[in-house]
Amino acid sequence: HLVVHPMSHLYLADRLMLAASVALYVGGLMALQWRIGRRVSPERAVTIVLVALLALAGGAVLPGVVVVASVAVILSAMGTRTWYALRRTEIGAKVYGQAG
Image 1 (cartoon, rainbow, N blue to C red):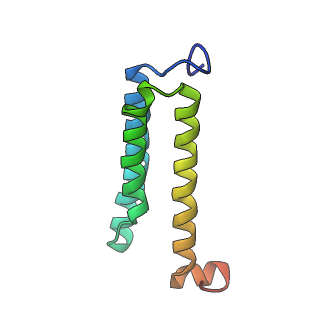
Image 2 (image 1 turned 90 degrees about the horizontal axis):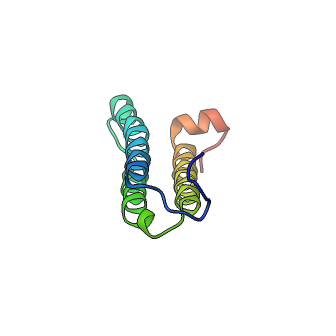
Image 3 (image 1 turned 120 degrees about the vertical axis):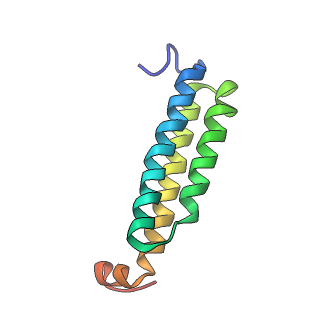
């Protein structure tokens, strides 16, 4: 279980682990993108900052279920933005059939 009760808050240790896990995952994607193409998507850096702020600051006042659901929404938005950006590239045109 994540929290004792859905409306209870996450403990500080849990919020630190949540922020660190997202930072490591998205940071790893950023490092891979840099190594492959020498660029970094700004939405990934924004995702790390937003999740860290949400987990550390908002997690103290928001219920745990709200924090975790918000992280899922942020990561989904990042993935969607990255997908749209990929579609506009040359390789995206080859994969998806057309650019734009």
